[in-house]
Image 1: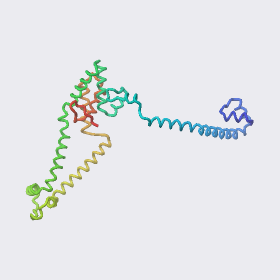
Image 2: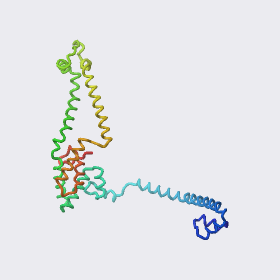
Image 3: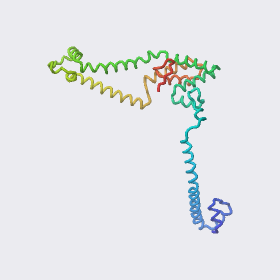
Image 4: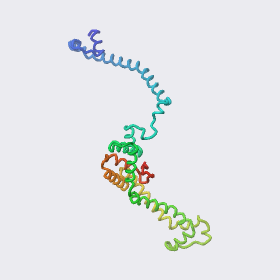
Length: 272
């Protein structure tokens, strides 16, 4: 095998002439290929070693540029509200559930469908929001009942345990336990020690039930389901889309799903 053939193989120029010469030599093919691979690997390693400083310098320059403060032009170009954003940015925020972005998407969609100005489209969007919050007073009754019961139980537990008059009344009509000596009921803590004899079982049981319910709720969340809330939100979104069939149903539904039950004066408070 001559030097020219080895250089040809190492450089990757496998022409038919050199290939035929190598095949004619038979036994020398293996040694030539191994040698060429070693040479090629060495050249590649050397090339990477020489290119590495340049690459590192480039990364350092990019890192330094990223830490530089923004220029005045960049600061002036920053959008201050959703109405100053591009359509692609609005769509991204809308998919993240931002209510302002979805309202702006709906407004621009109204502009294209009704062929009206931006201000007129905003008024139409507010009318859609007003329709969206109709009937929410009745649909939120279960939540309000839960809030009322929880607050009543939390505040009422203090006099039921520590107030002598409340404890005595409750014992007379519902417990009928022996009343301690007056000297043993002189302080709220002594009253609580007496009342705890019958308050501990229900409070402990209620605490255990709430713990189980909380665990159940966490597993429901892990499944991605929100039975009552999801049902109400989906039903409200579908009704809103049917009430305004001239607009894209998905845009109207997304707008409805982003708004919470507890809304501001325009019905545009976000659920997040």
